Each structure stands twice: as C-alpha cells, then as structure tokens.
Image 1 (cartoon, rainbow over the protein chains, first blue to last red):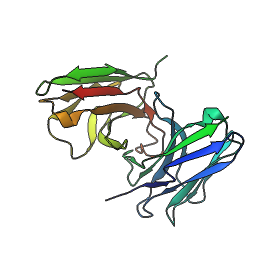
Image 2 (cartoon, rainbow over the protein chains, first blue to last red):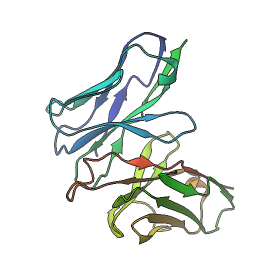
Image 3 (cartoon, rainbow over the protein chains, first blue to last red):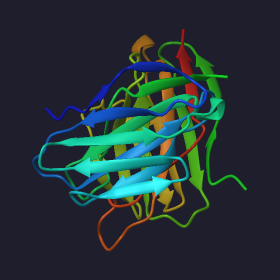
Image 4 (tube, rainbow over the protein chains, first blue to last red):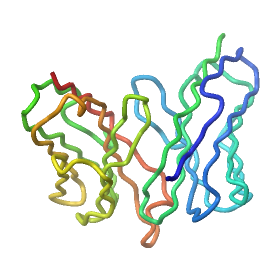
Length: 112
Length: 117
C-alpha cells in the first residue's frame, strides 16, 4: 500500500510569517511528486510537478524541494499573506499513468 | 472559459437510482480522470482514460462505469446508488509527455456533490 503523509495537518500563522510543510512518500518506483493548492469552494490547482531528485521549484513566494532518495518534499511559503490560506496537497505517483496518491493535505490559515 | 467542467454541480437522489455525472475539458488534453473525495477528505483516483482507452481502474464497485465518447469527455455512470456513494466527485485532465501522464499537472473540475438519501 502506497501512503503519502503530510504534516502538519493544520497550521495557523500571522501575516508576514514564513512557513513550511512536509510531504513524505515511498522512495521506491518514483515517477513524480505534485503539489496542489486547494482553496475553499474551489478546485485543486497545480503548484508544482517535480520529477528529479534535488529539484527545486519556485512560484512567487512559494517554493518546493524534492528528495526522492529519502522520500520527502518540502513546501515553503515566504511572508504568508491571507490569500495563501488554503489546503496544500501533495501527491505521489509510482507509475507513468498519472495515477496520483494524495496526502490528506496541510490546511494553512493566515491571520491578518 | 471553463477548462474542465462538470454537470451537475449538485445531485441529490434516492438509494437505488441510476445517475450520471458529465465531464468535459476544452484543453485538448489526452488523459482524463475521476476522483472521489472520501469522508476523510482524501482525493482517491477511481478511473483514468487516455484517448478514450481505459488506463486506470481502481477497485471501485462495478456499479460505477466510466464512459468516454471522445477524448474531451469522460462521464461517470453509477447504478443502484447506495448511501455510501455520497461524496464529492472530481473530474480532472492532463496532457501527455510522450506516453507519460505523470509528468504533467492535472486540471480539476469544480466537483459534483452527490447526496444519496
């Protein structure tokens, strides 16, 4: 059984704080690691897709790193803003078919 | 322009009925998926089609049958609905890189909330 674990489950920070979350996944048969952002009442939207060990990706104030040998990825948000409040999902795939195994998500609340 | 659309958005029905949820994408993607958001809020893959060909078929009851009339559409038909089928169902699509879907982000529809009474 392939499991994807995310921590913490929820996080409350003040506006301007920087924060990070962890995604742990099986380190064997790795194809790709996806990060999605899911705002309330909306659909999940892709942030990053990472495929190589050591990958680092950045989009504005959000960045992610990947370690496929030890099976983890970090998502960083620098200078959190209230509009960053959402659930952040990571998903791992061990095949070329796009079959994503999702974690339960980290829910971030940023207080103004 | 809606990239991935689902209809209906809400579906309330009685146990034992048969219902369908439709999904359409206008992104020109080759691969489409159905996910179920379970009671613990996990998104779980149900099916995937690649150019109308079934690629992923997870261990879902055979009351669930996907149908792909063309690569822009993937509909989900559910027979003999049960209380436990109540959930939010998401459709998604992604392009292919060569023969690999996994390297590409998936675009999700707005979800269909199914309630079985």
